[in-house]
Length: 298
Image (cartoon, rainbow, N blue to C red; front, top):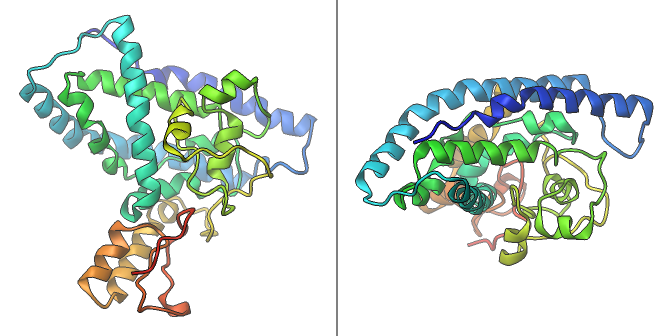
């Protein structure tokens, strides 16, 4: 297994530089329609990013053990060459799409990912607002290990995907040339993903490529100006509450549930799901978001 660099670590100076440039651009050329920066929001996003580094290091211990076990059990091996590495990046992006989509439509997974959508701003520091409970992500990449991709290669390709997505968190870049917008995830596409309007919810899940969304029916172009945040914003800058608020909401809904089927629904169905017999304000789930298309009550 050749040594693969830690692309996230190597990209930190670029993250800092781009963030400073974007901040200065708002000073020199204000845009009253753009969300811009707010000190408390920036502090929360940076704090969530730093916290994610600590918790990710902890989660990696059991995850690496599982990946290593699967890798040892499979007889398949894919060598790490320049062209196979490109294919691995493509495969990882495909599985990222399904991981990302799953984290929007299954509530217990959404409890992890909601952190990234909790800011009402949209700037480069929003990219740093990462969850602390990424133990929900690893199952989506087991197929890659099973066909012989070394776990270290998956770590590398995941880092490439994460680094790529940093630059799409900005309002300072409009639309790019049509071929780029057709193939790749861009700031315009990702602004849609972070919007809280009904027509934009649960759209544009792609990491590097947007073609997955075009192929699987989740693509929506940017038309109206997005309103960022959640459909039910949490109104807090406390990193601990940002990291855990949806888990707390799930616990409250499970505790108030009247049957085991309702308890399962509160955990494994969409963030906006509710049982048919529970109507009225008291029956509404306490989730901070809902699917783009309301699930039928059952």
